[in-house]
Image 1: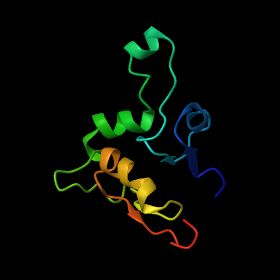
Image 2: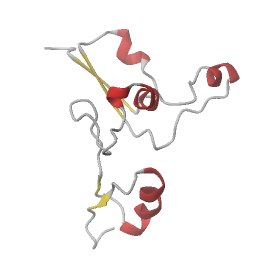
Image 3: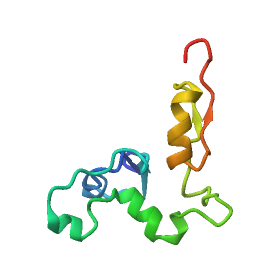
Image 4: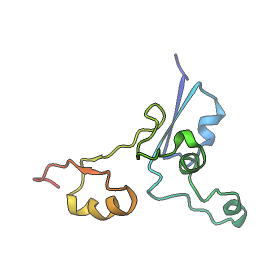
Length: 111
């Protein structure tokens, strides 16, 4: 029915998902991309300079990466196919941030 799922894109403002609680909350985003911009020392002191998704993935074992590199498939989906960029463009971020998990799937004629 209506209101069974709340979807929070980029998880930068979790308040919207918690104003009208739903049985299920979906957090969508990439913790390796631009994080929160925090100018308050107090907010930084309490860890608010790290996105909610990244905090969950770093502090809650069930959301974190397992020793074999995988995640609990019922809880975390890591999108690894890149359909927009040329392989040379994703090479560096793939190595630096994504553990070489990204696969370039863009059409070579247009990427």
